Image (cartoon, rainbow, N blue to C red; front, side):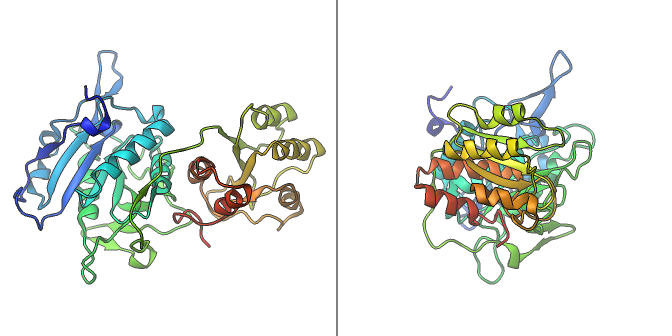
Length: 363
């Protein structure tokens, strides 16, 4: 097994592009694990398999006019086991190969793919090349698998060049599934039994895949004006507290009172509303006094937090709770990890949490 990520071997996949054709896009597929590459073990359970024979499972890869290489993590991950450490390693890999490749496709399990896409969006600052996450609901090689279609389309998106500007067409982290490319900070998994597993409720898809690809150029982020910066720290002492009618003081205090807690995503009702019971406000006040940052996110899939619109959210503003606008919970928790990991002042932290950093909120 390689000693470090830098020692991982790259496997060239034979395609229609000659290895010496410098004009053909050079793309790297990073296989982390997930349903896309799973097999059934002796207990009839789906477990990750080694993916070094990808082209045998997806022979259409040989017809592509790109130079393709595959990098498989030495220890494949079921996405339910993904941790912030894995996100940092993945960002490190992309940074390591950034100058050599024109774009990246990350094969990943669907359960936490939206979290990983959001995390990489924050970690890869000034990204100027496509990084597209994709996977499958049905393993590659199985009857009616969606794996090949998702992978082939993701590669086509990553390789795409703007017909007029002759630059990459999607210079940001995205998540492709079924027939749409979603911004990495806008994706949410909404389905476990259908092929359309992900949605973006508050922002339009960046690409729609039909007979041809349709790019929403006006909705795609512009090329950056600075070189890529790969961040290497995330604050893991964070939590999510979802409100519900009947929630007790003991539950709220158990979450907000965790020793060493730095931040919490508070999932509120509607436009950011929460109970006004004295015990609840007292719990929030104690957490804020200990320096815990609280980011208010709506439980609704559509719409946005507007703190102070109702009396039941005005108290949150008074306590120093930060409104999350229309950010998803997946982007909110990863943004909290990222911003707190920067180690900046309280004023700068609050400003960054309220600002749009990677297209995660609509100004």
